[in-house]
Image: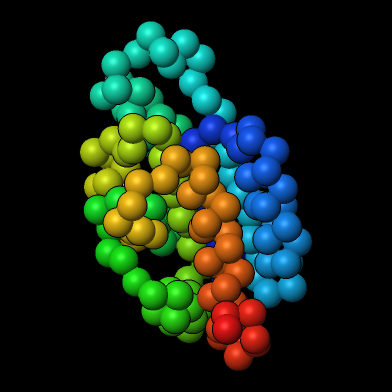
Length: 156
């Protein structure tokens, strides 16, 4: 199974990029994982929030295939423990899911079309984090999930 993280915009803060890069190195030992970046829209500041979400949504949908299992990372999504997340990952592997795609939207969230296409919503916290910070939190949790599945000591 391939796992993808589809994200709107790049990681520009060096401390976040360094953390993401560290977990990318670690993940190579466990799974096929990629980050797909959708470039920030030009003239985004001139668009309304709704128009920005619609245009970002079109870009997101263009990166998906009909067979992808799509999980959007959304503040209103179901929250789970690290162990439950690991169980979810294992379940998708057991179902022979071809590609599991997690999506991080832009600063204002997702368009209705992206919500409609998603198979599931996952919330990482009741607290609000920047969409750029969520990238680091997500790759750390994905790494943690794989160490949990192998009974490795990282989780403790």
